[in-house]
Amino acid sequence: MDDGGDLTATVHKIMHGVRDESVDWASSVLDNPLACCSEIIGGTEETTTGVMRLRSLEAKGLLRYPVIAVNDSPTKRLFDNPIGTGQSALDGILRATGILLAGKRVVVAGYGQVGSGIAMRARGMGCEVIVVETSPVRALMAAMNGFRVTDMVEASEIGDLFITATGNINVIRAEHFERMKSGAILANAGHYDVEISKKDLERLAKSVERVSEYMTRYVMRDGRELYLLAEGRLINLVAAEGHPPEIMDLSFSLQALAVKFLLENKGQLERRVYTLPAEIDDLVARSKLETMGVKLEKLTDEQLRYLSEWSIGT
Ligand code: NAI
Image 1 (cartoon, rainbow, N blue to C red):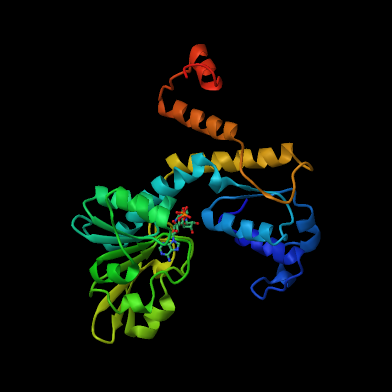
Image 2: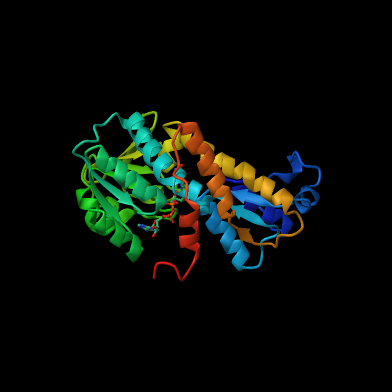
């Protein structure tokens, strides 16, 4: 079971004989890492970036066992990403800074599953939200959901708080830091601490000081102050407590059912990235609804027939 693809990458390096200085195999708990890895039946992956890495392995013909992309199940990506991260990222920012969100201009980079959840919740807290996107479809969706959409250069000049949620690298970099207002706050909710370029921040700063547990102040050469939260790592995991259990129960149910699926289909799956069947999403959603005491409407026999026949009602 992986979350972010690091375990998968390590296992594949072992299996493909790629030397990795970051792994100390001499003192590894495994007697024979290669033999252990060869016995793997399959894998499961929790998040968007991990699935991206798996698809890259698959496309290059390097994937060594079947993997279930748990992230791609609707009961994961439509809940954990926008609702879980949407809440916990703002929670982390508030715990790290204690700022009032109302009235702030918040720039959200990436209007995917995670970014759209953050944007919606920030708006609900009274922020003016500006979205930065590279995908025309997602940018259009943000615009039609009523958000101001622009590029990062323009957004840099107006934002009070910047939140990255792209899974990409150097999304906010030197050309953007140079335009930001003094006091601007930078936080990352995407995969890794490379979305906000710390290298550029350090290069441009005349001084760097940790001013509180989760806040580092970079004083630019012209005197402007920029505040980076949680060293650019995932703000919701570093400064808050991640997602509440009421949303992780969906993701972890899927993880457990993905392992069951791999065992039940042992030897029958190819070295590919699989998505769980829709029945598993239905099962997880139904169970969750039951715990919430929410009633579900049942299709009548007539409705079932109507929905499955091409000749009725035309
Ligand atoms: P997604 O693929 O749905 O959305 C990412 C969006 O970012 C896409 O719409 C893409 O067009 C856009 N984008 C890419 N490069 C950009 C750039 N330079 N500027 C502006 N937009 C850009 O992915 P999702 O599910 O929203 O996940 C985003 C990241 O968050 C991933 O790395 C994922 O692993 C991570 N994640 C973090 C969680 C947390 O607990 N903090 C929880 C779930 C996911």
